Length: 161
Image (cartoon, rainbow, N blue to C red; front, side, top):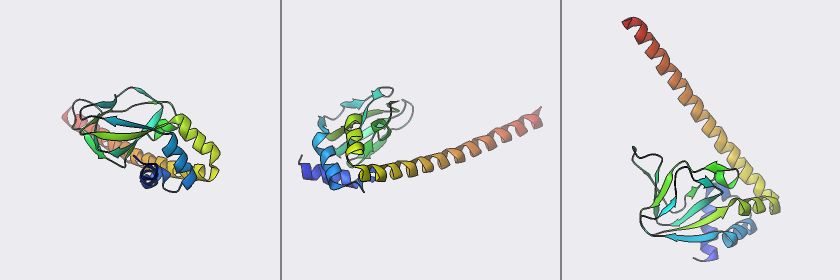
């Protein structure tokens, strides 16, 4: 895969969309290109993670557990965004559904970009902060709904008892 194509793919990822061209060039140059055959596992649920995978070709199935249908993601998706920043465990197993190519962006590469390109670091921080706010709002909604289910269950139990 060419450096230019990798940079173009990185620019399409929301986290990197406003980064300086030189920052993207560093990521594309330093990231490890990897290829997977259909059925190969990129990583397993519970594995310690120290970076992200940008899917540059193919498709991957993400399974959080054995009981649910997998989520399928295509080229252009960044898996493990949070793992580029902090120690974390993989929440799902990722399996190539067809021949798949990736760029593996380690935490060390990401930190280097953040240090060497402060303007890009600021745009990435803004993106992550906005993403965290959306996630927090979604979790608040889920919490509210679960509390209502619990209250309804308590009411029904009292009526029966």
